[in-house]
Amino acid sequence: MRSLVERQHHVLDDAQLADLTSLIFAEAPTEHRLVHTPLTGLPLAEIPLSTRSDVGCAVQQARSALRAWTALSHRRRAAVVLDFHDRLLAQREDVLDLIQLETGKTRANAFEEVAEVANVARYYARSAAKLLAPRRFRGALPVLGAATERRLPRGVVGIITPWNYPFALSLGDALAALLAGNAVVLRPDPRTCLSVLWGLRLLLAAGLPPGVLQVLTGEGDVIGAAVARGADYVCFTGSTGTGRQVARLAADRLVGCSLELGGKNALYVRADAPLELAVDVALRSAFAAGGQVCAHTERLVVHDDIADAFVPRFLEAVQGMRLGVALDYGYDMGSLFGPDQLQRVGDHVRDAVRHGARVLTGGRARPDLGPWVYEPTVLDGVTAAMDVRDAETFGPVVSIYRVRDDEAAIRLINDSDYGLHATIVSADRAAARRLAPRLRTGTVSINESFIASWGATGAAMGARGHSGSGGRHGAEGLLKYTVVQSVAEQRVGSLAVDRTAQRRFAGLFSGGLIVLRRSGLR
Ligand code: NAD
Image (cartoon, rainbow, N blue to C red; front, side):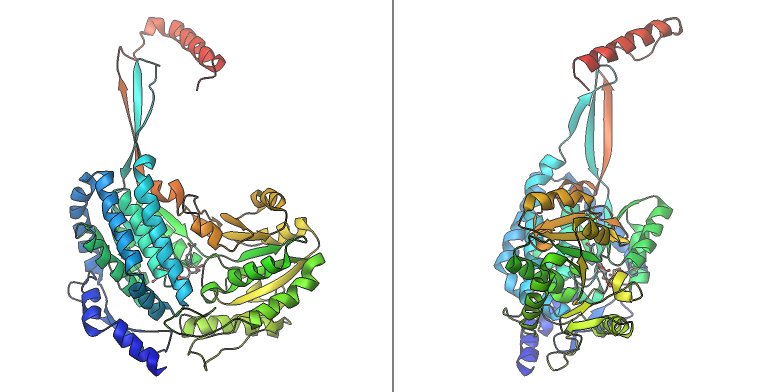
């Protein structure tokens, strides 16, 4: 504990804290928020909070900065982002410390955030020019006219992000929006804004013009909502309940929004699943970042034929996990984010037990390891009477459900309002691929945890049902930050048809369409 406190002061001394917080758009803050580190529960920083009027000013300044940024070529914008990419990887240890201090997760989980931002930076820096390139089409009359479809930036994009993966979600989404030519007003959770500010400092050093990316703090229902009211497009990541409110704000102004929301994700262990693989994938899927990942597994669906072999091996692996808080690698699970999370996780387990579920392992807080550490927990006998059956726990609690066959597994996986992610473990990957389209989820990973889908940056991650709409990564993750504009021009002649020639024109035109159809053209 003492060495952790010393490390904390070494990692985040007063000068660095002052430098980072100076990047917050808060002109005359009247309030500060004292933020604690989940590693020890001790104070980490005093964060100045932006006010409502700051939001208007930040949007205005972002709009002014936008002109110069939009005028840059893709190549110049990409150069800034690629320089940021290299600096990030070279200086990763510094931001890993900050992410761990803010969130309480393990260093390996913190590294996932760095890897995600680097992947997004590199992917879009290399592909934005192609994805955004103008596309040419035939005009209303072939040869005589032509049309060009262009992808233009939306303007000032508002991004609102949660505390669980603050660096990855804030910077990842912001980089895509910036590379599409937008300015960004970003509102991370104030409790986890330091790593985001560190990223902003690095982007400025890499050549991002000042003002193009603004970071605001302040309470979600005030400042987050003001961002949603002021931006030309809103990208929201968080819970389904808040997502609905943000969607209403966007709908009122008829601006677009993307919603990356909660999940109640399932992992299906097929009858033929290789046992060791199934145990390993289930372990990492359920307990990554203490289960505080939107795509992690909370429902373990196990085929009857393998259940008796799988369950004891899985429990043994869970009991063998190394829990602890340290600013270093070597742990399998760290702390929950704070007392609210600890309460929620404990409530779900207590409610399940009260209604007859069995705790196969875990089910206890571990204050001896850290103030908000909770054991990885496996439940059995969960029924619809229990909160944990359908509501997102967002913690290290997974429930086991046995099924007779693939059909029953599909029914159970789809029996959720959410539709974010599913995993299938099977020796027959072709069979798993055939099951995937029948799952009502935005992504499916086969024989690997959600990291497989998350790390495939070129493929869009969708969401269905209460898990939201819109997508991150792939073409979709960039194009959502653009508006489409088509410019059609008439090269020769006119489209006017004389009243007396309308019948003849209709005949000729129909004949022309039939020729197009027969020649296989569009
Ligand atoms: P939350 O909905 O409470 O808050 C999310 C963000 O919105 C926070 O920054 C919060 O301050 C802000 N906010 C709160 N009220 C607001 C309002 N009225 N208007 C605008 N902004 C407001 O969620 P949380 O507890 O911070 O995060 C956990 C949730 O996020 C979980 O449900 C998790 O599954 C989800 N999540 C989803 C993804 C994804 O990609 N699908 C990724 C990470 C987390």
